[in-house]
Length: 96
Image: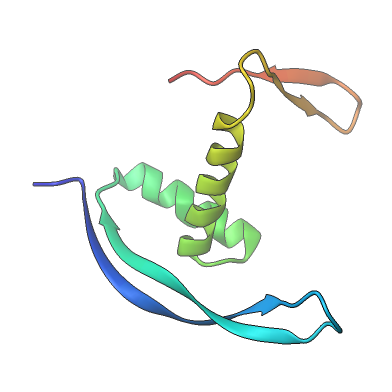
């Protein structure tokens, strides 16, 4: 059984900003309906992220993909640092 299935659907119209006058134009962004197999604990983590951010599970997944894409696009040797409110800085190490 495959790990995912793809089915293309047109998305509802989305508004995109126009540079002039703040008016918005309608554009259609193609969307593909996807079905993934995830372990129950990972699905629960995704749901918790969505709830914490007050977004849909789909939007939480989009945000996670965008974050991963950004991190993967950084030059070799780059570091991800987290600064806590008390000023402590820690390096995040990703293991693949």
